[in-house]
Each structure stands twice: as C-alpha cells, then as structure tokens.
Length: 368
Image (tube, rainbow, N blue to C red; front, side, top):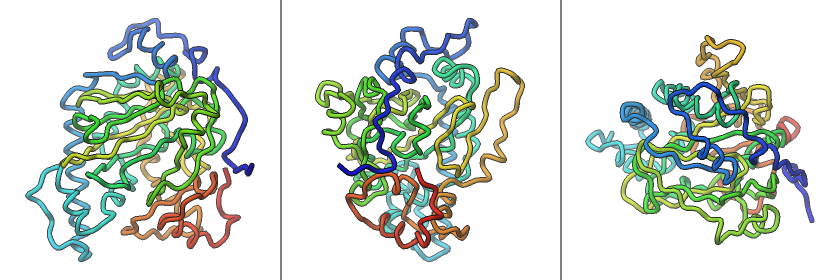
C-alpha cells in the first residue's frame, strides 16, 4: 500500500478525549459552559451551544459581509467582469447573482486576508474565550486558519466533504488540540447546508488517510470506508446532523470527521469558522503564518496584535510557497495549498492543474 507524507500510524487519544480536559477555572466567568457540557465536548468530540451570541455581535458580522460583497462587486464591475452591481439585492442573495455573471466570485471572497473588525470582536469575545479556556486552559492563541464560508446555493465549491481538520495541516498538528467554533450567520439546517459530524470520531486519536481533491474543488476528502477501518467509526450510528439557530455555535475538535451538506435553499448560508490552541504548541501551518496570542496567564492585561496578524494573507502565502513569487492574481478563482502535497491526488481538476503549473520547483514547497 502506498504511503503519503500525511500518513501515520500514530495514535494520541489522550490528547483529545476526557484525559485532555484541563482543570476547570475556579472562578465563575461569563459565558462558561457547565461541567456536563465540557465533558460532552471531550467525550463526544463536539458540542452544540444554543443562544450564545448576542444579536448585536452577529448582526455586526452580517454588516461587515455586506461591505465585503459591495467591495467585491465594485472591483469586478470596474474590471468589466460583471455588468451591474446588484445593489438592490440583500445579504442572502447578492453574491449569488454576482456569481452567475462571474463564476468563482464566491471563491474570491473566501480568499480575503484581512479580518473585519466585527469578526475580530467575535473571535476574541471575552465570553467565547472563557469557553475556550475550559477546553484548552488559560493560555489561548487564535489559529491562523479562519474562514468566511460563502455558501451560495447549489454550489460544489462551497460544499465541503468529509474530512478531519488536521488533514489540511502539517503532521505536527496531529498532537495538538485545536477546538473550532462554527458560527452560522442565519438559522442553519439540513436544507441550507448545516454541518454533519461523526460523534466520538476522535476516540482512537488517529488521523485517517485523506485524498485530494474532491470533485471540482480544492478540498481533501475522507472516505467512509477509511473512517470505519482506521477511526473505528460506525458511519450509520455515529452520524450526527447539527442544525444551529442564529446566535448559536457548534464546537468540535480537529480530529472529528465532519462535512457540510449542500445548500438546497435559495439563500446564501454565511458562516464563520474560528479556531484556537495553546500558544506553546505548533500551529501546523507549514511555517506560512503564525497564530495570534489572545490570552496569557503571565500577562493578563496583554493586547492582541491584530496588525501583525492581519499583515499576512495566508492564501497569498500558500500560493507564493509554490512559485516563490509574491505577485498574486486578484481575480484567480483557484485555491492551492500544501495539503495537495500531503495526500494522494485521486482527482485532477482546475485547482490541481493550476497547482502543477505553478510548481516550477518542487523543492520550494514546504513538505508536510
């Protein structure tokens, strides 16, 4: 059997299961989960938290996205790639119409590097960090990989297949707890593409063998047979569908297999995924971008250095890592990344072809 740079027989269940649960804060803080909820996260690998965010916190994110879409529309219009700005349409329709004239526009928006202030405010929200402290302890770093999901209706590029998050990172991440908060910006359900996951998918502490790339996308994928064989998952009975109402979030760890369902509604399903970890451990992002320190037990009054973090666009770094060139085509609708060197390429599409075109010197690529 062929092996690939991402393949491993290592198993570290103790870093993700109940043994990994840190000592809980003695001081009661706003937003904290109950002990039962924290134990559920470590036992099952995930937790649904309803009614966590205040309306004004997520409404600000919606407003920020409106600005991002408006800026993208103006840029595309000025470049002659769309004939109108679609200003009469709202947050949940406008990008879809832009996409009809300029296929791949949602990918351009997905690749934004600068984080709007409203997103920053959610990611570093004190109540949310109080929850994260219950999962990893008092020292907290934001992970460099965060995403705005531009899930336009019936679009393959926004339908993410089964995977473990570590499948995208280098192998040093296999021993690092990186909890994710998936935050929908409207009520998310099976019709518009909520999340599915495999409960207890972390119990073996193993990383399954992924493949690349899914359909016409840049996504890695984890076959159900591999989940059964390597991760000891009962793919029928462990499967959980996770509808989340606006104001809630889904927490899960980086070994739990998950995917998003297709958006079969008429509205765009916007969401954020945000991650954290302990600052003493590697982020696993191939040396392309470091994390963002958010809390330090040694310096409780520290200020978050957003400027330095925002100065590095991880998508540009991914591309530059292949070519050695900093010039980036702002209208490129393909995505490449180091994970393409980590797993077997079983399906060649335009993202893979572009990756192969750009990889003039394989030695310039940071290997997994």
